[in-house]
Length: 98
Image (cartoon, rainbow, N blue to C red; front, side, top):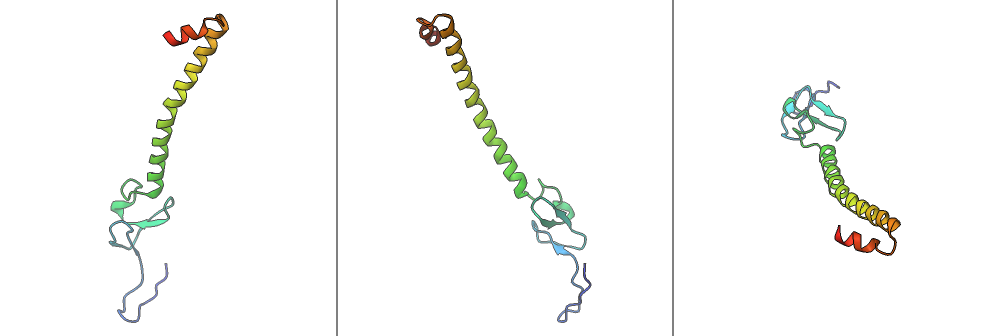
């Protein structure tokens, strides 16, 4: 950090504002995920609502929605193939009753 004195106020230009609460902090915590500085109260990703964390939650939600749909389709397709190989002429009847 530089120790530059502002000419108008005579105060040192040190520290930075918390990106969440805007409080001045002389020893800010830097988040390497969103590349912002935060005070001690907001130093963790979930405390300052890190954009990276929100993106991860969104991705996880999308993964959970997609997984059950893929499993249902694959099981049904597998059942049809199994019964059709045993009795090709009546395989469709077994699949409809299952």
